[in-house]
Length: 354
Image 1 (tube, rainbow, N blue to C red):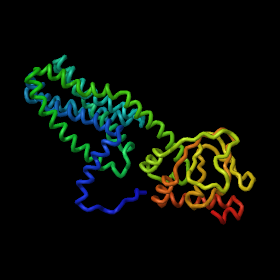
Image 2 (image 1 turned 30 degrees about the horizontal axis):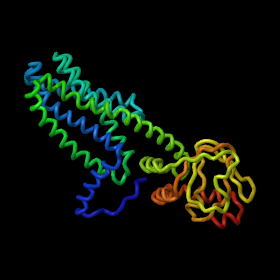
Image 3 (image 1 turned 90 degrees about the vertical axis):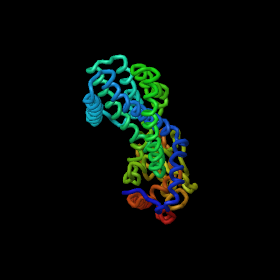
Image 4 (image 1 turned 135 degrees about the horizontal axis):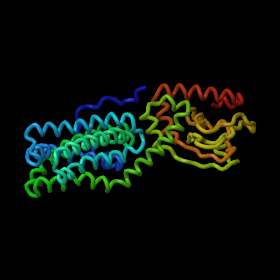
């Protein structure tokens, strides 16, 4: 099911939306870091566009065909690594992979200056192609999970604008560096830009991967809840961002019958008893959600939920639950079916209040 969309905006808003993309880059630091590293890669691409010619003609004396050979080597590495990624790369450690990819864009340039031999340089150009695939996997996957869906197109618009500027800047700087340092010196210095930035960002890249892994665990639990199961991946991913955590010791009530309801709960670990007017009517466990009746029907809690064992809970605010359930018809249908089923288990008096 497609996500809900707002009305089409007039063209005069394009300037505001463009500015919003850059503001979002400033606001979401993890997305900013990943896109910043990608810009280090495109800056290096600008270096490479000049170096491919200079290496082939001046450093290796391969002649004009050498430019094609080196360019083809970059492409061959990209194709091979893309095929390998299909087989070996999972959804984990994508930020780290992007950092490695940025480093692999720069290090071969530095090594090409240190090892100016045709077979070595051709192999190193293949490594740049491998780095390109690794950068793209992280870059076009992770920001979509780090920026709200409504801002995502604007963020990528800002990124593409900066990409064009960074490639141009790289190509502009390289001739001056060659004139100042010589071909091998310029290769050594400019090739270290990407790897240096990747090393400086390394700890934060690991932190991003850890946060994504935790969110994947939350998504796995949320996907077991019937009314969330029909949601498209971006919607449930954004829902997982809003999850809070709670721990309830055995014997303690999560909430009491008649209480005001403002949160929805999903059991990550443990078991709980559902009690209506002092009578045990159900025991629920990991992957079960509860508390939706009060939120969706705007009524007091229709039953008491008490921890049978220590509980680890994911909790969601009323507004976040209502936004997804009301925004997707498939989710709303599942929620309505679930509520009718649960009310049928309760005392008729309780069912009428729900």
